[in-house]
Structures are given as C-alpha cells and as structure tokens.
Image (cartoon, rainbow over all chains, first blue to last red; front, side, top):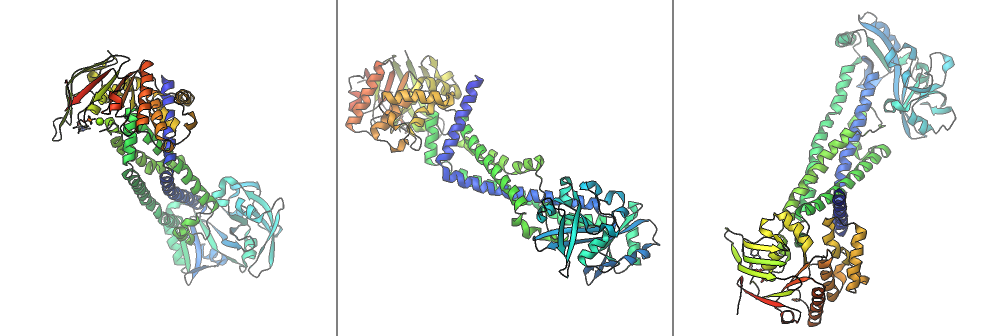
Length: 400
Length: 225
Ligand SMILES: Nc1ncnc2c1ncn2[C@@H]1O[C@H](COP(=O)(O)OP(=O)(O)O)[C@@H](O)[C@H]1O
Ligand SMILES: [Mg+2]
C-alpha cells in the first residue's frame, strides 16, 4: 500500500515534469524571473552578512579611543609627541602609536590594508598574534627590517609560490623589499584577508611618513565606563585632533547597516514580485485547454487531490530550481565578482574602507528567511487557485 | 445485472435560477456482455445518462447500481475510485491530449493507480499492437491520423481492463469508413466480454448488427414507441 502511494506520487511527479516541459517557454520565463528575485535577495543577504561580520571583527580590534589629526577636513599624520600631552589625563592605561593605511599595488592591481605597530606595546586582545597560522609577528628593532606578516588574499595576489620575498613601491617609486615572516590563518580571513602587518618603522618607510609621525594614536583606558569622559578631556587637551571612541565607530557601522533594514523592504518587494509572477502565471493558467485537460484527467479516474499534487510538484520544481540557481548565482556574484552589481549601493561603505574584500557566509537561517519570503508564498498561492481549477466538473469532458 | 437504474432523475443546479431537469424517472438494465445504444436528439439527456452510468456523479434521485455499487451512497472520492476500476470512456472527438505522446495518452488512467512506468509501457504496448499502432507510440497525439486517434482513444478506455465501455457520440465527427471500423472494434470487444453503452443518433451505430438493444430518450425520459 505504501509502495503504491509512493509509485503514485512518482507518477504524478513524472506528469508534472512532462507538463512543465510541454509549456517550456512559460516554465523557463517563470523560472528565470523567480531565480532573479532570489538572486537579488541572496546577494543582498550575503553582502550584508559579510559586511557585518567584518565590522564586528574590526570593532573587536578597535582601540577604545583613536586619535587622528585633522587638517582642512582630512586626516593627516599625527606627531608621536602628542603622547606627552596626554600624560596628565587620569584613567588612560596606555597610548600606542599605529600606522594604518591602504596601499594600492599598481603592479598586481590589488588593495592591501597596511598596519604598522609595535606588537609588544599593544594590549593583549589587540595584538593579532592569535590570528597567525605560521611564523611570528614582527618585533621592533632594525633587525626586523622588511619583515611582514600577510593575509591569505595578499599571498594570492603576490603569487609568492614558495618564495618569501617581494617588493612594493614607495611613493617616490623606489622599491622596498619585504620578507614574509608569518601568515594569518584562513579562520580570520574576514579581518586579516587583506592585511599586512609590519613594525612602525617599516610602515613609516613604505608610506614615506616623516620621522616621529604616525597615522593614529590608540588610547586604551582602564575603565570602559570612562571612555566618554576621557575622550572629552583629550579633545580639550588636543583641539586639532579628532577623537573617535569605539561606541562612535560602532554607531557609524550601525548607520551604514541601516540599509540592513532596507533589506526588509527589499524582501517585501521580492515577495510582491513573486506574487506578481504568480498572478501572471495563474491568470493565464486556466485556459480552455487546461480546463479540458483537467476534465479529461478527472473522467479518467484522477482525483482532485491528484490534480492539486501535479500543480504542487510543478511549483516545487520551479521554485526549488529557481532557489538553487538564484543562490548559486548570488554566491558567484558576491565571491568572484565582489558584488559588483551592488557597488553603487555599497559606495557609502567605502568611507570606512576603500576596498571590499567579502568573505560571504550563507547561514541556514538566511536561506530559510529567503525561502520564507519567496517559495512559501509562491507555493501557497499556486496551490490555492489550483484548487479552483481542480474543481472543474468531470462531466464537462463529455459531449454536450 | 451490471448496470441497474431505477427511477433515476438528474437535475442540474438544483434550487438555483438556472435549474435544468435533464433526466426524469429512468429505468434501465444492462446485462453483462451486451451492447446498448442510447438514441435521441441533441439535448435529450444522453450524455447525462452516460455520466451517471459512468460514475461521474450520482443521480439526484432514484437508484443507480453500477457493477454492484449503489452510487448514491458513495462520496465523490469513492465514485472516482469505483469509476477507474469499472468504466472505460470514449469521448466525442476522443478528448486526446494533443501534446502528449500516444503512449502517454493511453497510460493516463494508470498514473493515479501507482502503476510503475515499465508496467505502464508493457500494458500500452499490448494494446498498441492489438490495434496496429505500435509505430505511433512515440508520436505526439496531435500528429496522427483520425483513424489512429480513434484507436488510441479505444486503447485508453481499455488500459485498466475495465468491464464497462461507455462511448458518447463516438462517430459524430468520423467519416463512414472510420465509423464502420469503430463499430467493428466494438463488436470485437463485446465478443471479448465487455459491456458497452453507446450514446449516438447515427444510424451506422444504432442499426449495427452487434447492438443488442436501442433505447430512445426524449426530453430526459425513455421513449416507448
Ligand atoms: N453541466 C450542466 N449544467 C447544466 N445543464 C446541463 C449540464 N449538462 C447538460 N445540461 C442540460 O441537460 C440537458 C441534457 O443534456 P445532455 O445530457 O448533454 O444531452 P445530450 O447528450 O443528449 O445532447 C440539456 O438541456 C443540457 O442543456
Ligand atoms: Mg451529449
């Protein structure tokens, strides 16, 4: 009995496949529109997920207070000497200089994030040394000249293939030689993928910063509750300096991710689109030929539920295939084409980071969300009107 | 008796403004292995009577027993289950789905029975050979000749080895030669033990020697001359 039921469903599935094939132009256009909707949704979800992952990781390594020197609204190098002026402020645990910049490699057409710091001076959580797959973080001193730790995508861009040395141009186009002393692990790709860490002197040399200059001063405080108070005191002591607190940076990210809520409206739009597709499909669905087909099937012993099952399988096949296609295309789009279709939307993000290296991650929850907004309404709304069509009376197949 | 109707009436859209009384007080008995013709002008109720015999719907009132089952007592679903075991239908214009292949058309009644593809093909193959149309098995039904189409329609009515064959004006759109061929096949089926009811006002049908009895219907009643 159970065997027969299975055979019957297989037969009905078979029939659904063949009737999709018979209406292949219509099925194909339906499939493509549906896949496009899912592609957009999944791409968006992948990008926002990747960005917020990255933001979280970046925030984890962000000092409680960052000081940058501003001039005519732009950031410029800050003198190390400013450190002394912070001496009197109570509650500061440590001030560590850092050079953080972006290097565009014109030879390999790649962007690297360069970080120059004295690893030893950084507090425990901010050292990045736990992210190493091999080697060691560069130490201070001149014997560390050219030593650099690189992330996986830089390794790829440089095409090292066993070598440990490479060179980059300084701003005056002279070559600076580097030796890889360690690699970041793939596990921290989200953060370290495009990251290059060297000591302060080396970064200063690469960017040709004057002696005694860095890009920012990282301030670590003893009590996180005092961040705002300390920031205010620093502002008073150093009026020309921009004081960024971690909560502020967090807020900036949140603003950027405001369009995450825009994602909600996109979901709704997509759902609407799915309904439009379906309305178009179903409005044109009950043609005289289809009525005739249903009536014939019923006289030949098909139950109403069998005919509904045909419609159900048709919808499952179309939407399932559309999901696989749409999600695969979205993954390829985001990973291999760096979400190039969304570039215009994402430009806002480049205020924070000029180049996007996305490590997408599609979670089961996201897949379910996308399914909930597309496939489920589609299925529900295809089977309900199908009910009406399956109730075509059988005797209409007989001669009048 | 394989088919037993007594006092059968059918009213379409009962109680509504478009109410139609299609059949009144029909008594009809058909013995197993016999061939009966329902004759009568258009609109007299022949198709409605075939629909009741064919377990498509139960009568509005009266008793209808088909192959031992009282239709009035059966809910819709069981009517369908009973129909596919008992009744083979041949329609006016044959009602073949033109985009499906000949093979797929013939095996349509077997799909909801859960008959696996191999067995479906085997059963269809036997019938295709019997009616000399095996070479058309993979053709879309829309592309074969009228004579072949007729044989496909008959094969489909036999695929589940149903004991009763019902045909609704089968020759209405056929030329004389094909009409004759149709009746010859019906004669063979009768000889093989099938019970056949044909609705038709074509003399080629009701004057055929294989017809055991002709029942004339007028305005939904059996007309006794
Ligand atoms: N589904 C239906 N709904 C309403 N009236 C119908 C329906 N089918 C048939 N009728 C009416 O019932 C009567 C008998 O029709 P029918 O059985 O088709 O006659 P025949 O087959 O002899 O031409 C006609 O008046 C017809 O209009
Ligand atoms: Mg009729």
